[in-house]
Length: 328
Ligand code: CO
Ligand code: CO
Image (cartoon, rainbow, N blue to C red; front, side, top):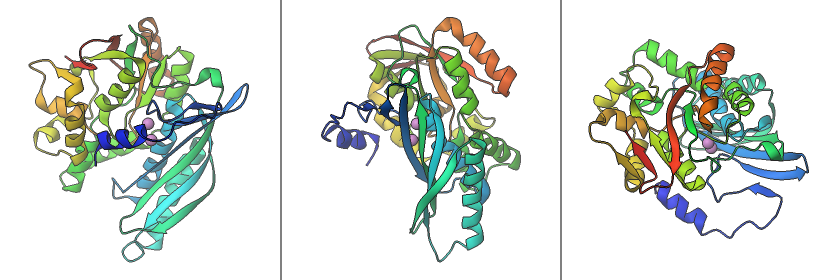
């Protein structure tokens, strides 16, 4: 089962008719939004996965940052969360589970989020994540489907965590690179979210399992537009290209490429390893923001000066053309 099959299952569900549902499943957005009153809506999301780094505390913190990210991508402020834990009681010891939960707890606290409880099940494979609730004013919701033709695209974290964590599993990843990607995956998208709202973003999503191009595809489709990506401008983690060339290709990357193939045109001469990285499934990736081109420089400067975030302008949204995405 791949992303295409899941789309099919969701398409066949009965449609939500409650008028309080402001964002539902139709546009494959990062979270659902439910209106509580004229000026308040609730944003909800859930995410959990198997360990991608060996350190249990870091894994917990990364899983939490990843789960919280969907609220930030919607322009919301996360406030409460519930732990979701699957644990194999034979191999994993109590200390490991305690560290995972502590990592998640401290990351949630950094975000100003209260953990209210959770649920655990025995599971052959260890899994952890959060179900998160946040708030947003209905007028400030940032959907993935409201980009406008002419918008510039800004990305707030480099890509390559899928390829590099695959290298880690094969025990080929140097310590310093592991430290760099761990820090990036633990970084909250909070300040990036606050900054994009200040600078008039039209649309946003976060880059996770479907890779940069997969999430951009949803933005383009949802907005009824096409997108153009300047591949050379996409920020990459150091050594990601080398490991992609060396064959550290996660299974999800191949699935993403197969699914997106009909919707993407790649200009001749774009490095094959780079094309792979544009499809690389990310964990706790950056925000992909569509905003008026005249606002991009100030957003990039704001992120750099106030949060040390190296955001990059990587392309633009265009009127609907032959293909959803053009990579040059
Ligand atoms: Co998301
Ligand atoms: Co999600």
